[in-house]
Each structure stands twice: as structure tokens, then as C-alpha cells.
Amino acid sequence: MATSTTRLIFAYGSNMASPRLRARTPSARPIGIGQLKGHALRWHKRSVDGSGKCDAMVASGSDTVWGVVFEIDAMEKPLLDAAEGLHHGYDEKMAEIVMEQGTVRATLYCATDLDPSRRPYTWYKNFVVHGAKEHGLPEHYVRTIEAVEAIPDPDVDRGAENARILTPTRSSPAACW
Image (cartoon, rainbow, N blue to C red; front, side, top):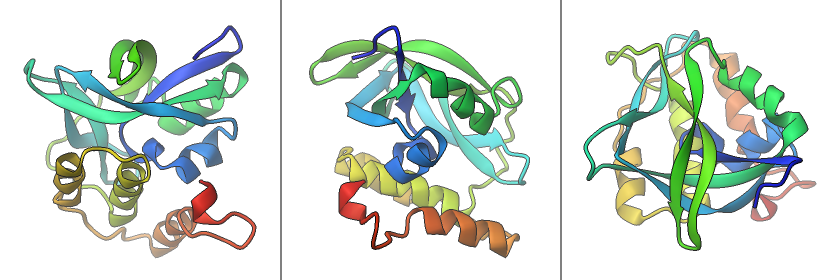
């Protein structure tokens, strides 16, 4: 678990996909899946690209956001903060994450700029679905993510660039992610 030189991050959106998170923080290593109780997954974070991104919104005690706890090098945390837009649409908080091996405290990003009318772009939703399947989140939860309405990105190049992150290459097959 986390040391003085590492940080635990709870990824519940696009960062669950190991290729996406490693593109941002190369040291990212999955520790296991976990639950953030009393929160619900929403896609209402207003993004500068015009879409909706994931948020772990405080909700009823019976709601749960599933995700993946990753350990990253503490020196890479500012890179992740920049990619997430810390203080520009997302803030961070420490939370208790319930894992099979016990409860851990991990950092997560929570949306501060909300617009419930926003929808995720297809490529963004694909990151979330990929990560959920990659790490074995519960099937009912994966189906809920798959059922979210997504829209095409009007910027075709941005969509293609993000889709390439999930495309295995000879030097980095998907099985190694």
C-alpha cells in the first residue's frame, strides 16, 4: 500500500482503464477493486470539450461507486492533477474505500462544475467500460455503465487519438495492461 513516496488513487471513471492512467502516470499499479459507499456514479461533470465526465456524487447510504485503487509514484501526482483539471472542475478528497482486503484511504477527484444535460463522448465512455471490465467490476455495475447514453465527439481527431490509447500495439499487447 501507499508509502511516503507513493499515493493511493481511487479511479472510478476513465482512469480505471490502465492504458489511460499509465499514459498520465506511468508508475500506476492496480492494487484492487473497491467501493466508495454513499456515492453514486454520474456523468454530469462539465468538460471543456463540451461533454460530460464522471463524478462520484454524494448520495444515499445504499449507493456505491465501484472503482479501482491504484498506487502511483508521489512525484507523478501533479501530472494526474493537471490531467484531471484539479481546481478547474474537479477537486480532490480523501475517502474510505472498501476493498476485499480491508478499508484504505485513497484520493479521488470529485466534480465541482456540474451540468446534468451533458453526455459523455463515446470514446470517454469506452475508457470507463474498458476499465470496469479490465479489473473485473461486478457485472451488474458494468451493464449500468454500458447503458449510459454517449454521443459522438464532433472533433473526430480527438476521438481517434483517445481511441488509440485502448488499441494494443505489438510492443504493448492489451494482455499486459
